[in-house]
Image 1: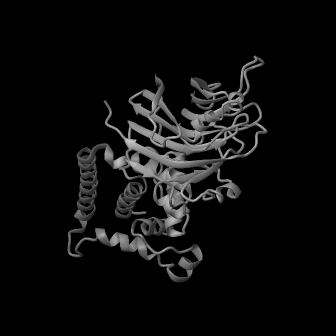
Image 2 (image 1 turned 90 degrees about the vertical axis):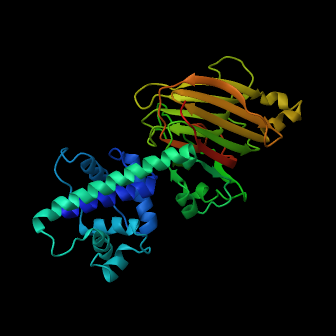
Image 3 (image 1 turned 180 degrees about the vertical axis):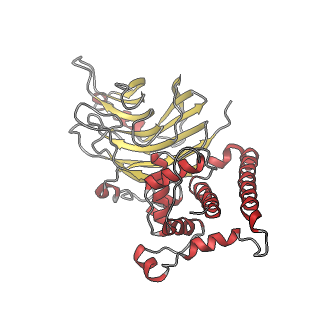
Length: 388
């Protein structure tokens, strides 16, 4: 790729990042971000780009001194241009038959053409100035926009009324560890997102790798935020059924994470204690850092008592969980009862050294033989907050 084409490709790649993640690219993409970007491109264009190549492009664009220059093919550049230009959905076969001349890459390049009579010795230099000017202007307007509208720019609310996969993807959701059988039952109750307590956990045991099936994930783009989820009539009744909110540094479970869930517990290391349904908060330092740490353990009620007092079960008619983050301080809250708008109560506040980049909604049963039960998610909200 010659120098002008490389400069155009640089602008194109930054524009792709901005369109996918809603922010200017400041550093090379992680593996998770690269895969997410490639999934977006595939869903929008029908054409695929290798995530490793995308990751390498981002590394070189952010640091041209880091190694040998990347040389994407014209087909790849055409695919990326199609994504930016909102080209019609196609396939590799259709493109080969009808558009083998890769029109969208050349259409994108048209924006950067100069008059034919210009002094050729100055074209590259002038073009570089233009590109740098465009990048600086984009960064400036992005900063002004962010300052002007504040945290509202990252606010998101979902009542789960439309669970079409394309609609969910457009809303910023993506699914990790998809189990097609149970994922296809997500609309089992209209107006709710239904997940199931499938086998899995976000950290390994002695015989199993960390995995959460049908983990619904979206990026977090604010340093300070509030994440909130509402559940309806979820009554866990077997070991280790649970559901709630998961904050992650990455979606491979190798980084740090925090989990807040409504759960069932009947294991006490050989000690005799009543079974319990509880709100639990757990932190994990990631792969290679040993066992997770329980930082909150609030019993909602003891199931054995419900037989004599059925009203206790009404405490789970509406369950809401909330995590608030300000700097390194995390506040965990819970609301439950018959009222949908019951007041939240603080469970614990603690400083934790973690910078979550993703939030997930999950339902699991650990690596146990417990039964699979549905969990109805009624509402989710992610709100950007001003860091104090």
